[in-house]
Length: 117
Image 1 (cartoon, rainbow, N blue to C red):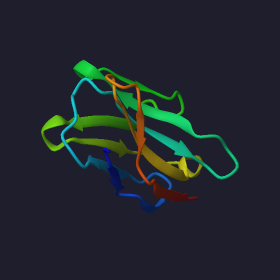
Image 2: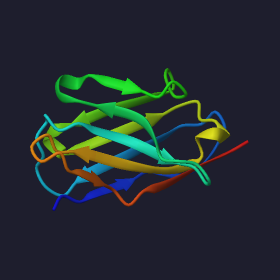
Image 3: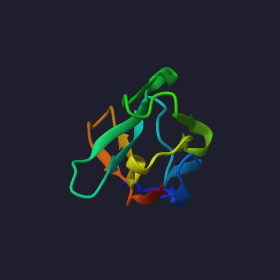
Image 4: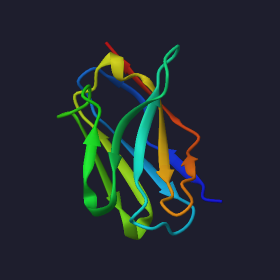
């Protein structure tokens, strides 16, 4: 069972930056897509950014140009650099891994990001 552990959340003022990290507990194939989702109070969980085999990325429209997802396969880790943060970015951010072998999804425990105005 793969465990995903996020870190890097916190409280930041609008316009500031944070970098989230997610480390897998074991070696994972670079073919497995990894991504970041977020869930704000009273809202559904939504995709923020995803990185797939070959390094292709996609982003939610609301974060394009501000957030950057990256991956270090040697460290079994994925990162989310968040710049120009807005209060509406406030949410719990979850790391996600999809196994292309089993189609099973794995989730981290979540890390809180709070952006004050």
